[in-house]
Amino acid sequence: MLSPHKPQPHTFTLSDQKETPPPFPTTRVLVMSSLQREEMQRVLFRPAKQRLVEFIEIEEPSHGRHFLCVSVSKNKVVQLCIVACQGKKSALKSGSKKPKTKRSSIQDCYTRKETWSLQDLTLVDGRDPDVDDPCFLLHFDKVRTVKAVNSSAKYSFVRALVALSDQYCQKSLNLRNFDWPYIKPTSFYSNRGDCMVLSQICFYAFNLVCLSMCPVPLDA
Image (cartoon, rainbow, N blue to C red; front, side, top):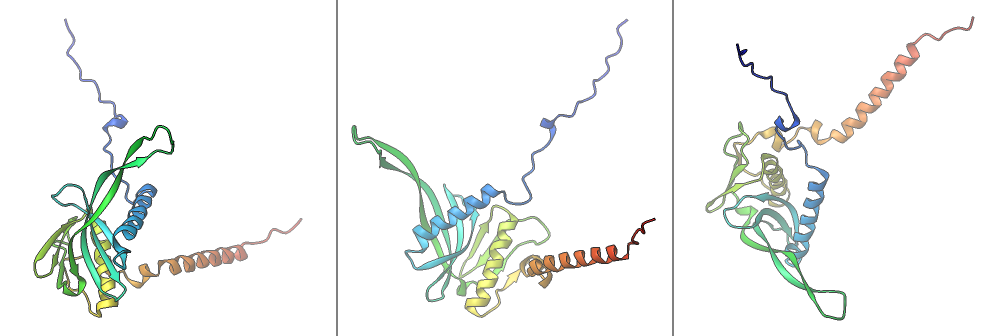
């Protein structure tokens, strides 16, 4: 008589684990972001006598990568713009003289698609502060919907807009549906460097007090 089939217990393997993205940007991501900033500053903003202050990558229906940028000109005018980045092939001559050959290289081509003045920005709407929503609305004469790659980039860009509006437009930026502590950090978080130093000093002082209270063994 055949014994009833017993299901074999499932063995948990590494392939069963879901890969989750790191909570903080990796070193490679930070380096690539810095190189992207330098390239856009050199190619697009410096010739226009502007300084790129902040940029984030956004999702657009058209082909290629897109960035939402905010810059300041020499006459203190703050502008927002959508920049499209598309790779194009260019022929480069090889180092050898004979025979003359050419090799292809892909270079990024940056183009401004839309431009606004920060002075004309009447409202920034985060839509829903209670959910992880990377989208937000920029209210100019018309409402422009922007979708960042994540909520962290969204808040990072809005914080830059708030600071630039206070500094160059002499007015508070009108915000709606944002988690305010992430927009305006408290003094504790804004001065976290000083707090870390102070906490280390207190930690060392506490250790010295504890050591001073310890009984000293007497020699027999």
